[in-house]
Image (tube, rainbow, N blue to C red; front, top):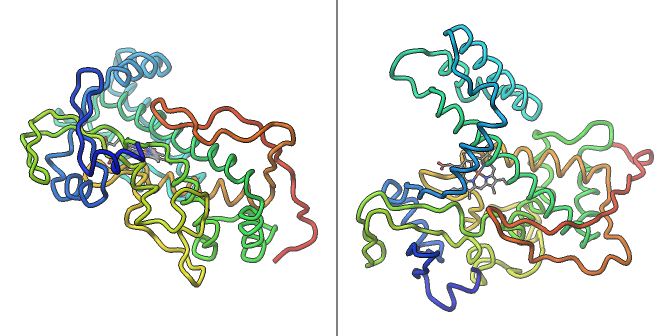
Length: 331
Ligand code: HEM
């Protein structure tokens, strides 16, 4: 995918089986489509495997929620339990209950006929949270351990920064983020090279649409070629290497990059972006504070190509997690 732009240009057409699919491979074109023509590009095509997962696996595993609910009070109780569970996830990470921050607590207790909270929608919400929200972050963590184990210098720089700014007496938390530019840059760089959603999540145009002089009929499937942007030579100092300095300026300050959109953009941008960023920061900074990741001798060179299914994931690997000596320095 990353070489596609050079070969076929900013907009190209490929057939996925019999489905013609438009591939957008330049940031300005993706922005034009997903942001400026947000409504027209806000559709999602039907992906049979997703239907199978949601209507098969999710319903099966959440069976206790799927039976017909006999009374309103039973419904309320189950909804309350689910909201409580989601809240607990939120409290653990940010101190702000998710149910409060997004208002689900109130919405799910409504029982008017206009409500969007019927059984099918509940399954979709569970699927969104647990399918879209778990493997994505876990896969990024796995890419992180793989790349970090290849680069002791990057690990050491992050570790020293954490020891200097936080010490060992407590784990790093979100309030430390601004003081840990190297950690932040390293996490973004892991996301850049990990590139877990190389074609974003497929989109579909909702009506006949013009884009850069081409007409896309209603229903056309669209892929955003995030791979080509994440290693675009025009935008990155080191497009083909793992270098957190890609996200640092000359003074070593963390800087955002406009073309870095691993969570997509526009109306259907990943709704879990903030949660994922928070999780990645907390997990990586806590790990780098106390552990060192070492590539075991005799296990050959790592496979950085990974495999691509729903996500681009690393192949299974072994890594040594060695405790650091935390007795010496403290802030
Ligand atoms: C590193 C972590 C994650 C990455 C890289 C990621 C990436 C993405 C991408 C690229 C999209 C498509 C956006 C678009 O079409 O413009 C997406 C959609 C989505 N993500 Fe995430 N995501 C992550 C974590 C999460 C989490 C933690 C949740 C929920 C708790 C979540 C829930 C969703 C949902 C529900 C959608 C579909 C939104 C829609 O169709 O309107 N994601 N994600």
